[in-house]
Length: 148
Image 1 (cartoon, rainbow, N blue to C red):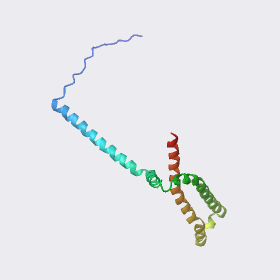
Image 2 (spheres, rainbow, N blue to C red; image 1 turned 180 degrees about the vertical axis):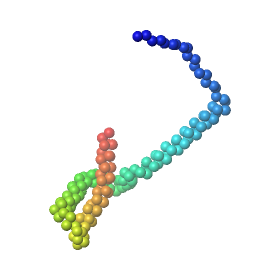
Image 3 (cartoon, rainbow, N blue to C red; image 1 turned 90 degrees about the vertical axis):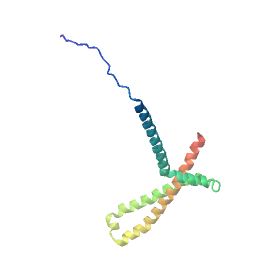
Image 4 (cartoon, one colour; image 1 turned 45 degrees about the horizontal axis):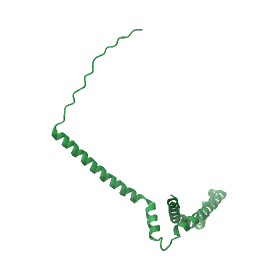
């Protein structure tokens, strides 16, 4: 097996030097790009801060920490109890629906009775959990910060 190789010398291409005005224009464009990126970063930080749902709760806990020093810790202790009660209510509701089947909610009277027994209680308990939960999380975060 034979092969033939041709070797030629390499000549690097000549890159023309940019004119003096071009360097100034490029540096000016780069400065403008940096300014725009800084503005975008500032806007993103502000947007992220506005979307932080826990910031409102942290501010509330900070504002009232002198008047209610144990509020976050009590919420942390109460949360599992409230969650268990909520789970019990949901379980009871689901079990009743499974036992009665579709026929249990067909009439207007049956639907109204069902909503009277479960609707308001579940909605209110859900709202309570939505208030206590973030405050309990603040207590957990405070504990982890103090441990660090």
